Length: 85
Image (cartoon, rainbow, N blue to C red):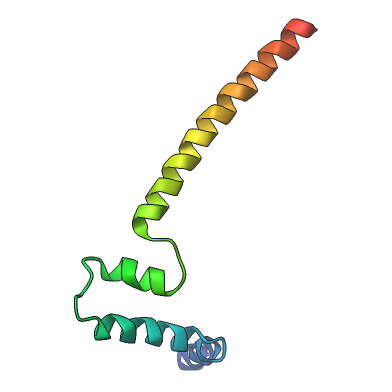
């Protein structure tokens, strides 16, 4: 498949799946904002239904905290299992 045909196929895929329409709506909403947000990327993410950057950072920190607690509990469980043997 030549390069142009591949690009055209991908464009049709994006159009038929609604991606282009959704992105266009998000960008139009940003354009129509009277008070432009400090982070255009975060604005578009929110319009697309994703978490804000601050929410993402909070979730990332929470995941790290939970992973540390899990590792501690797993180590405690292993030690307890060794003592019972």
